[in-house]
Image (tube, rainbow over all chains, first blue to last red; front, side, top):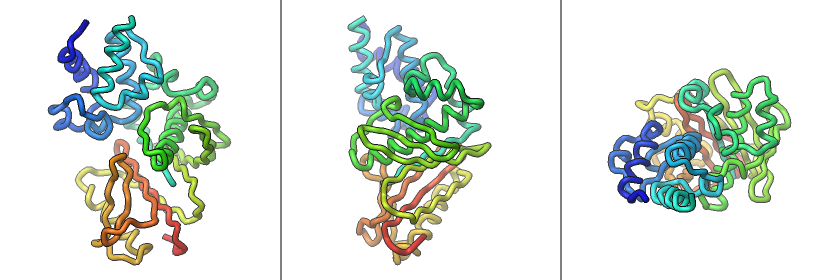
Amino acid sequence: MKGKATLINDLKEIVKPYIQDQEAFDNINEETDFINDLKINSANLVDIALDIEDKYDIEIDNDAMDRMLNVKSSLEVIQTKIASK
Amino acid sequence: MIGNDIIDIAYTRQHSDWTRKGFLNKVFTKDEQSYITKSNDPFGAVWRLWSMKESVYKLHLRSTQVRSFYPSKIICHVLDDKIGIVLLDGSEYDTTTSSFNDYIFSFAMDTDSTDVYHDIIKYDNQLHENYFATIKNKLAINLDCKSVEIDIIKNSFGIPQIYCKDKKQDVFISITHHGNFLAWSLVSTKKEPF
């Protein structure tokens, strides 16, 4: 099982190509919001979900994707999905 | 309530790949996917439907105040090249879409007003303040208020609200920015037209 620090680091790499606010990205933490803080286009939230699926070989159903608006809930989704693999 | 969404075509071609495996399933219903694959212009169909969904989501967010990211729950029916019907959480909304070579713009409204004003402009980051000055000048005429007395303040859901002398006004504004385009829509519930 991966630790939270590793997961945050992985997530940071995944969202990096889509961010439009470098300062918010440099200060990324659990409370960081993908749209409000990182200014990610909503269409790219789909790419993030797909990138996470590829990275961890998990499936993110649409209910799970609905929760992935910020770092904290995304980490929860990833942890839950990895645990139930 | 109102909601709008603009899509910069060139920016989208560069930054989004709708043909990516899994993308359509995460965003569209089976019927919408069938509409896309049968279309002569699948790219245009994908982003037209996306802008319909996004404009209705923004409208819906104003009343529910619950953020969400569940595009396949926002169900689109295309009536013609402009008009669409969108279903979300048991409500039905009408959308109007304008498709051009360089952008797609959709607008949704459920407010009983014929007084709607749109402005679509090429966006330059350096001129950000100028755009807001233009919007305030436009509002000043309608609200009988000086433009310096007008504030456009986003609430915690990112929805802009219009204030004049610190008093919230009965005018809806929706602002959308994507790539090199910015669009703003105003709807007044007052009698005077914009």
